[in-house]
Amino acid sequence: MLDTKLQEALSEVEFKIDVRDIQGIPSHMGRKVVRLNQWGAQEGEPLGIVGSRYKPIHHLDAFGGALESMKAGGIDFTNHEIKVDTYENGAMAKMELLLPSHHALVGDHNLSLKFVARNSYNAKWKFQSFFGWMNHVCFNTLVSGQKIAYTANRHTTHFNVDASNKKIQNAVNAITNETETFNKWWDTKVEDDQVVNLFKTTIAKSQANEIKIASGQSETNKKQLYHLMGLYEAEVAQIHGKGDYGRNGAKGSLWCAYQSATAWSTHLGDAKLNSTNNHIVQQRRQADVRNMITSKHWKELEKA
Image 1 (cartoon, rainbow, N blue to C red):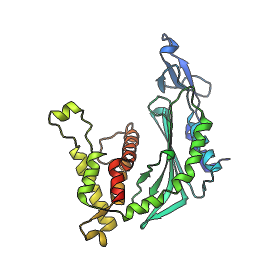
Image 2 (cartoon, one colour):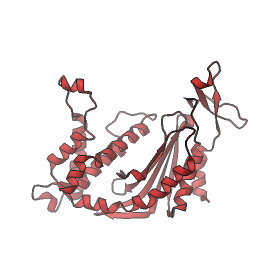
Image 3 (tube, rainbow, N blue to C red):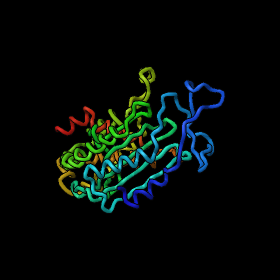
Image 4 (cartoon, rainbow, N blue to C red):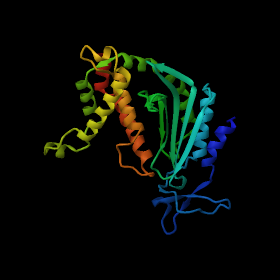
């Protein structure tokens, strides 16, 4: 049974929906997802146009089921903080849950377990969720490199909510053991040129195709690299400004590189955004960070 605070947050997505035929268009060519008023009539414009195999996953079922799975998995909800946001008249929804009872110390940084789930009725988002950590020093959301920490399911007739929630339950133990890795990153010294090369081969790599690169366009997004290195230098100054990291030629740590990447994916001050796309940009950047910390280049730095 979910407590009152959780139920109140979920009330944001309690509205009813339906998938209906579009007048004049055969159902196999497309249908519409509509929001219903209290009398069962369509309210406003369609939330999305979807294919014939589309199976809606109600926001309430997706988020509520995830919360129930975490409770069954032994997650402690004491002093939890929950936030549920909707976008585009409810077509898209995101739930963020902070669990301060599950905490860890990395260096002198205090972390709390965090869970994020997303869902949509317009096919822009699959139903997806992930466990990560929130750093209370900078409020970065720390993404995990463990595949088990993530679930993603398309809205089709093959989707099984119970199976998805079982994956969420299985991820609980895996993610809570991850802070040992974080402490190793804190102690792993790196030099500036190593971090530059890391960013060049991952999150600052240009999206230009091979033809553009062959014609002289840089393989590196220089503006993004400059911004990331600025974030990295700020992390080094804040974390390791005094001590061994200022000597022996090694200015920073792998933890600083990770923190600068998560700052980039959490705080979107460098992006030109509006209220309809900032959550999409954040999702893409979090995926980029996850790919960075599972990349060959990152693994090589871990061994150094």
